[in-house]
Image 1 (spheres, helix red, strand yellow):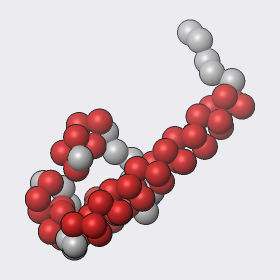
Image 2 (cartoon, helix red, strand yellow; image 1 turned 135 degrees about the vertical axis):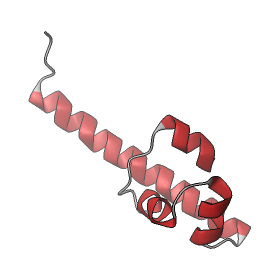
Image 3 (cartoon, rainbow, N blue to C red; image 1 turned 90 degrees about the horizontal axis):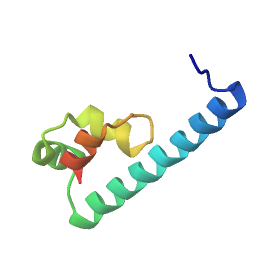
Length: 71
């Protein structure tokens, strides 16, 4: 079984965190341009308001399926 080096894993985790933060900022910016509250966008997308808040702050991990729902 192939194991990734610890330095590669740390780099991957840092890149993923940066990506999630960028996605969150983009979602928040779009929501604000629409003039919607988190609750309105969450209801429209079929996700919880808590999940949306975590996504916007970069704290939530989003699957591609969920990403498509929010997009």
